[in-house]
Image 1 (cartoon, rainbow, N blue to C red):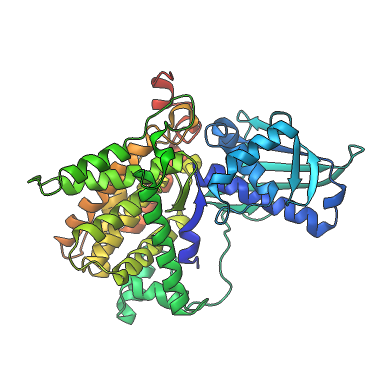
Image 2: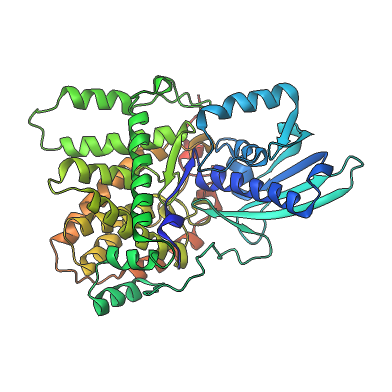
Length: 460
């Protein structure tokens, strides 16, 4: 079983698979050098980025993630404001301190190769690290795969493998049908069932505090995205598109119009919440993978909708929301994929929409069957969604796509709550369909920037 904290992880933008995953992989490789006792002998490193990592790595800051990992940084603890100064120092001096202790010569252009025209058979997001001694001899090699949502698998392991907890959980499930049966047989909500599983690994107060910390990071991300205590929000997003941030202005307009008779004001707020998160992500800020960075705005936007527009909203509801959303995310991660490079954006925004739809329905009083129905509706109408970032950056259409996914999730939850939970298409069926659709999808539509909007929008 996966943990809720496998699905929701704190990191930095712009991409969980292309920035966070490579950072974790580089840190793993650097620590392996230390474990093998060869760290002090390293004089030079080479990093090869294959497939989607090579094709869109420049726009997704993959090289930046690799460098931070080699420095010894972890995605959940790195301070975003320190990143650019340290990268500038590296560019100026040509020296990189491995794990903060071992200086080596390092040139970002020479030592990181983007090989987007080549793919390794195991997974499109592949990295190879090679460490050399002063005489050019190879000291160590490592091969890693960034399989979506910040998950990293080392070469030699099954790519489908993830870091799963070792303790036996009281209510294991791997499919939607099994989850529904566990809820029915034990008289539990989805959230209560997942909480019991989590308590096999850590005490309940620790689970709750951890989830509220996740919520706190989501709230801080929205605030920074609105420009609150964040002067950088007035600047354009990084990259050649020079895309201006829209969330701060939208936030100011909504505050100015507070109290006006607008029946769709809630939808404007949901748009603002989602765009704030994804603009902050695009700028390299701190976000929560939910389940990925490219889709990081959907779940927080719907949670902010719950907090702002549902009268009975509470911290207990926030905890239940995250537990329910995580259960749905586990099903996709286990039986299909959450990687845009593997199945397209249906595996990112589509999964996030499904998670948020089921979770919102749950905190609004849905039965487990209605939760499953909401999650199924959320994905059913994202099937075939392509991943086609313009310029290889997580900006167009990614920012607006998160806003659309959040609004769709709210509608899916409301549709499910109007029913009795019975439905013809099961969540398992739609997950299988999503996986098959992703397998049939051309590689040009799977985070390579070789198709879709990525080739039909002229970069300025």
